[in-house]
Amino acid sequence: MSKNIDWSNLGFGYMETEKRFVSNFKNGAWDEGTLTGDSTVTISECAGVLQYAQTVFEGLKAYTTEDGKVVCFRPDLNASRLADSCRRLEMPVYPEDKFIEAVVKTVEANIDYVPPYGSGATLYIRPYMFGSNPVIGVKPADEYQFRVFVTPVGPYFKGGVKPITIRVCDFDRAAPHGTGHIKAGLNYAMSLHAIVDAHNQGYDENMYLDAATRTKVEETGGANFIFITKDGKLVTPKSDSILPSITRRSLMVVAEKYLGMEVEHREVYFDEVKDFAECGLCGTAAVISPVGKIVDHGKEICFPSGMEEMGPTIKKLRDTLTGIQMGHIEAPEGWIKVIRE
Image (cartoon, rainbow, N blue to C red; front, side, top):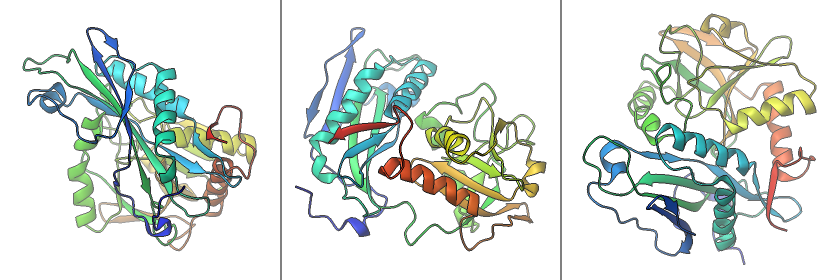
């Protein structure tokens, strides 16, 4: 029985649900894990996560398809990205098959919080892991906790998807050979000042350039860029310090296999940006946010697609991907994990 929630007026925020999954790593091994009704975390004041930010996370969604199934999208890629993040921060890898099991169990236990089809809302799933035992010397923790909670969220953009204005940022998001390619909490902590500053200056987001030369496009604080050339190619920036967005990787397949577009995943120089026809940001929360204007220290780059609506090619990409997610369009094998038939 679906919860009595005003689904169409949900914001993008946290709402406590009934159950969450918890597993602990101790003496070199993960326990079986369990569902609990307790939403509080109790840890030592000296826990590794509090002292040295040893924490990683993921984000994915469950939703109701047109034919009433509850599904989530490519959770295997979230599982493998979390494993990569763990390895980089010297944390024990949570087994990828167990990760998917934990996601399924948590969604099943909160099935009444999955918004109905057509509401625009989804169930956001947040798996995360942190160092839990006391660590005072600078070293990895010995004990960890892996958790999954869910919360129903409204559409990322209230009132439709309007093109946004972003600025070229003077701060760096990630160092070459740093941690930009993993989903570590510390990457997001350091982007907070830059996003608050951008909002204070009247911009929606930051465009980060590569830290070494400041000539190449990387990403924003929480999304990958996609560009459309004037002759209809999809171009996505390539760099070792960009987070490998699951949405971006999926859009590249959609472009090539479903829309017959040419796709280029390569270094993108900032000098080229003015010559693109369309620009967007892609990620789990919004799928694609169209960019209408980029401001580089007072110089404006305005895309031909304009400030009123999403460019035609990006709209087609978004409609095709959401069509696959919602079950109108047949998905590539393995993309849709059915949680409830």
